[in-house]
Image (cartoon, rainbow, N blue to C red; front, top):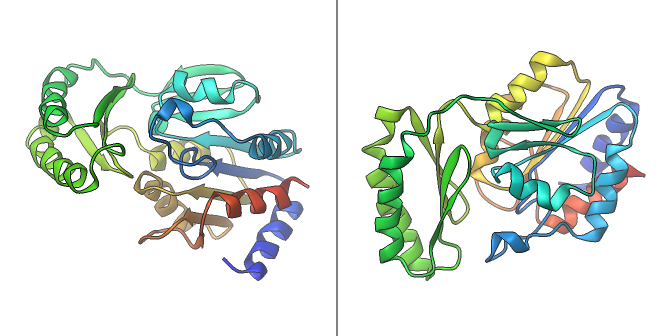
Length: 252
């Protein structure tokens, strides 16, 4: 993203009367960490987010695949709205609400498959969230981790249709969740409830692409991918430092 685009975003943000800002967490506001519990929001970015939250006529959401209790732990010092587990749970005005109904019967079939791969791939681990299951291989040997992730996806593809599930092949993670969830569906619900004249959406992972794709139909949406790779986003930033710089401009 060049300085001209940054200036345009800043100008349109300042002139808008009903703004929506959607920010992914890991890889966008904080660095990916070997231990997910260590991904604490840096003080500088925390201050910027707090200013944006209190900016009049601005609605801001953290939109993440993390479990709701997990992300709440990092953000409970800021009165911010949160979309967790790719839209399965939403926190607004300090209250968490489920967005889907699930009997979780599918977990009985999927967990043994994850265990099978975890045993074969040292330093990988399983994370069970309320509405999803995630297999992490960030700490594993890179070649073994990637090969194991391909094997896992192959095994999962044989099971997901029977349970109406989908696989998210993310950044060093493989996530299994119901087809009823996704960041694209989550932002669609927001638009059914409100009209926005400025939208800013920033994320770094394949899980954010549903969100970027949805905003292709909105001319007043600025979608930004952090890092390299193919994307539906209109613009790119290189790293978290550049995200912080852009958000700081908007908060001033």
